[in-house]
Image 1 (cartoon, rainbow, N blue to C red):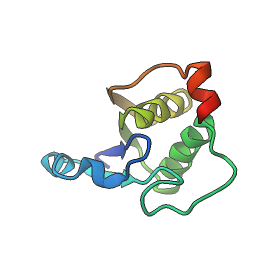
Image 2 (image 1 turned 90 degrees about the horizontal axis):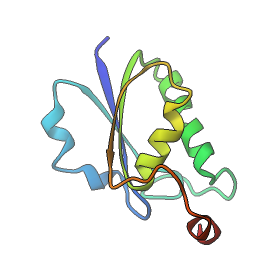
Image 3 (image 1 turned 90 degrees about the vertical axis):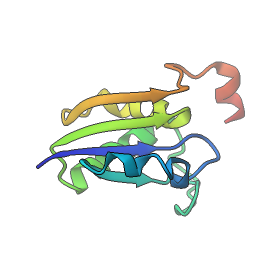
Image 4 (image 1 turned 30 degrees about the vertical axis):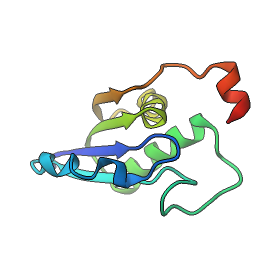
Length: 111
């Protein structure tokens, strides 16, 4: 199986954020997601922590039985990608755009 690119958008966005970009990567399988509570995803009241979003990505990889994965994340999506990367043996690479490696206390309080 080839490499799958998983595209993860930023806060208050949707999978449409990547429109016009992901199509240039047709040599790969492309999976764009809506982060829970964004875009067309089902709203949820629990599991809105960054770590849970990372576990959601891991669960997706397992569900789709992916062998080779590159995570691409913008802003919040990059933080989710970093969280998932810690426990994702299928990971082949990370592409992070406008992403921080940590969440400040002020940002976490306002989340």
